[in-house]
Structure formats: structure tokens, C-alpha cells
Length: 276
Ligand SMILES: [Zn+2]
Image 1 (cartoon, rainbow, N blue to C red):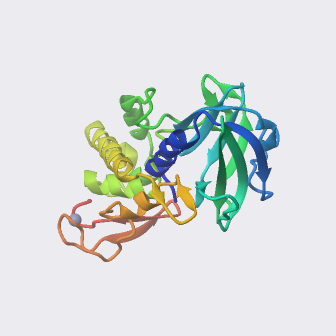
Image 2: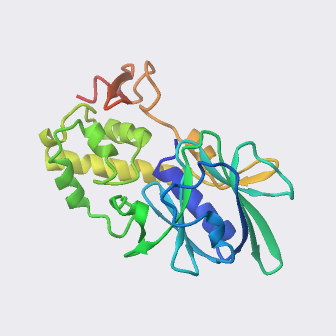
């Protein structure tokens, strides 16, 4: 599932590949591709020019030369792909955009096997689209406030793992990077947020920033036969994880087998020896 580093890789890829292009036509190819709260069908954006691609947490939005924006969430498996050849077909295309800039034309598709991803036409309030309003700034946002995040985490009785996943406190951290951050900070995921010192909480936040920054750096764009993949999927698989998904394998720090527990209905991976 794409988390902040993967979504940031997609944002950077889109910025490079479609900024400045005009949306000539839009086709919606699946009934669930458009969020029900969308102000209009996506094709209402025909004629708009893509000015920039923005992101907060795991939400992306296309800034246009008009007041509305196109918001995108990749869900579990969403991808943006650029068709390299005319007529190329990915397997699970949910929406297709014909783009042009001068004599250049491109086809941008939203491919999503599991259909949890969505697109939506929205208004912007204070620079933020409606569906992103409840999302706290992520650590790479100029509005990110580290001490505010630490204060909010310290009020939570819930396990620190669940508090880290709470997108209203700090956005962008999902199951993978939450487990990696706690492993790096040597904190057990079950520990209640309000039992950790500000010092410890600061360490967890800093490790989260560190691990996501490393993952962004290793993201990068990958290519296949017919599509330019702006999804960052390859970065996701190449990034070496210490705890997440490594149940039973040795902890890279102490060699103890990594343990798994279900916390808040999400599986958590941790070292029972160095994360107490
Ligand atoms: Zn260990």
C-alpha cells in the first residue's frame, strides 16, 4: 500500500511528466473511480491546464488554471501511468486523460486493481482541498509543527503504533513506516502514547522522518514495456525494511526473531528484545 514516500515519488514523477499540459479529454472507466463527494464529473476539467502537483500525507492534488483542483488518492493499489505508445492498455484502467502541450500529446491513466483509490473535483480552502482538510501536515510540509505533534501523541492512551497512524496528528505514516520508525526508536508498538516521555516521542517522530526521507530518496521512477510508471512501486520493493513483514526473521540489530502482534486491527512487526 502506498505511503508517504511512494506518494511523494508519484507526485515528483507527475510534476516532471505532466506539469504544463492541458487536459483535452477525460474518460471515467469504473463507477467507483470518482469519489461521491466530487463537485462534478471529472470531465468537467476538460480544457484546464495542469499548473502543479501538490501533496499532503497520502493525498495528491493537481493544481489547475481554475479554482477547482483534481484530488487523487491511490488507496491500496492506485498508479498513475503514462502510455508510451498510442493504444497501450494497462489491465485495470479506471480513468484516462488525454493531455496536450503545444504539439506534444500524452495519455495519463489511473490504473487501480483493487479500486480503493479515487479521484475527485474539489474546492480549495486556504490552499487545501476539502477532503484533505482534516489531515494534519506531514513532516515534509512547511506547516509541520514537531512540538505540536509530540504534545498530541503524549495525550493518547492508545498504543503508540495506533497514534502514529492517526492522520489527524501527523499525516503520511502508514503501517510499514510506523513499524520501521518504532523499530529504529526501540519502542514497543503496544506502549501507550501517554506513558512515553517527550524525549522518546521526539525520537519516534525523528526516526519516522528519517526513514521516510530515506525511502523517498530510493523511490525513483521505473519503466516497463508500454508505460512510464510514475508510481514509485519499484522504490517500495527495493527499500530494505528492518521489521515490517519480517515475522520470524532475525532483527538486523540483535538477531532475535521479529515478532508480530495485531494492534488496532493492523499487524505490527517488532523486535521483542530491543523494543521493550
Ligand atoms: Zn532486536
